[in-house]
Image (tube, rainbow, N blue to C red; front, side, top):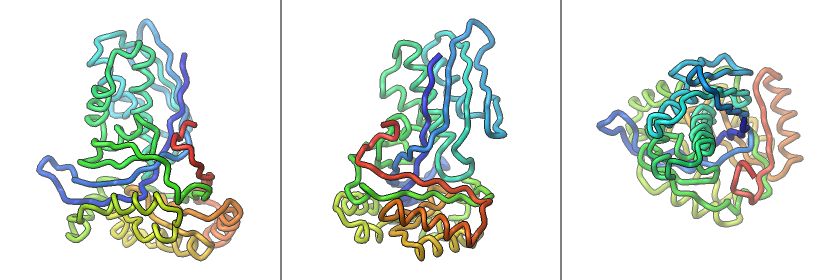
Length: 298
């Protein structure tokens, strides 16, 4: 048996450039892994096929689960032993814009490749990952990255100087946001659906400096406006977090998680107190300090 940690992510920028003929959206995005983990364990078996069990969430364990799809795709390429027991202990919230399912799929590809003696090259793994989901290729690497195309073209990046020593706070309400709904909502906002390329490089350049206040103007999410219009409490979340000292607030991915970046741990802890006083304790909150280690698994 082997055990793996499966991190989540936030999008520091998500710039939608248009809808493609294949139905996907062309985009550029800056993604950063976050050290909040699901736990996955894998045990080879002699029979039973692909068996997935889930703890901590009401997730399907059938063929539409991304973990099962990843395992099926891997074995289709390797023609090896298809009998594997996989157990998922879920900690990353669902419908949160944090990429938990995509992470689980990527970690599963890496784990099965390891168990099988690395029969597949990195390029083949990335090709498989891209077919499973647009965010999956990013999670093969565990480092900050720029992703382009529909998300499958991933360029790893070094740690961002402007974020070192800061504290990241994640806040998710007691509801999720459907990713298909969020993208469909862009049809009502042509300016957001057809963004201008180049925002990602501007953000990376700014984050390579030491001044987060200067970089903050380049954080952007095309999906944020339609989601916040439908769920105005998310805008209130951001207003409250900024009033509590956040240097940056933004929705991650398609939501519903908002992230906030604070100058230090003490300011973030006080912000959590303020948030819970204003909104109660039913919403999910997670805080972590950002270091110069680019790997979420470090």
